[in-house]
Amino acid sequence: DADVTQTPRNRITKTGKRIMLECSQTKGHDRMYWYRQDPGLGLRLIYYSFDVKDINKGEISDGYSVSRQAQAKFSLSLESAIPNQTALYFCATSDSQGDRAYGSYNEQFFGPGTRLTVL
Amino acid sequence: QKEVEQNSGPLSVPEGAIASLNCTYSDRGSQSFFWYRQYSGKSPELIMFIYSNGDKEDGRFTAQLNKASQYVSLLIRDSQPSDSATYLCAVNPGFNKFYFGSGTKLNVKP
Image (cartoon, each protein chain N blue to C red):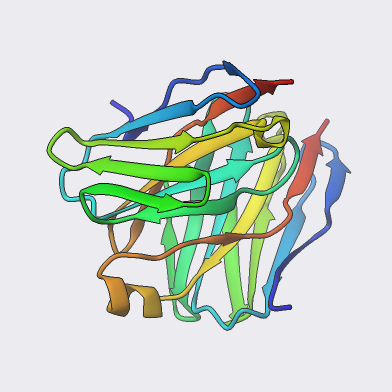
């Protein structure tokens, strides 16, 4: 099945460490997203990419960076992790073909999530 | 003001009842609207989308959209304990934006 995968699924790290979360997809979608989810705050967009050469900041990009290595791969890095970056991180994909068919319809498909704990 | 507002709940309904979940949004230009279901510790999964005013039915689920009132709702008929989850409303105001509400937790009691 075409899918969205994330590695690692769980990660515990220490303050100041650099870590990378990886996302891969076999859906053939051109758009990819990184979200974090905190209790009571819902999903908040960190970065999004509409193709390999197009990367954009979301609402909470400070402290994060991303790399779109290929259409199917989108990585999120925390250059120097801090405790308030402890959260559940989701990668998502969508297909711009939906825009052309329905205007702005672009359903997002989510990976299984990475639970990150920064001590 | 948040882009998408939802009551956090929990909303408790007995098994077999109708659960009504509500969402308001701030951008009048929003064109498509989504309801995602998220079980605890799992990823969100799409259950309904709607982009025209009125009702859209899919099995036990009905999405309702009123663009004039900037309001979208989800009705779940014959609620089951397996429907117990957090329901996220999402709004697409344009090609490069996508906002989620913080979700409403639904508890269906056997």
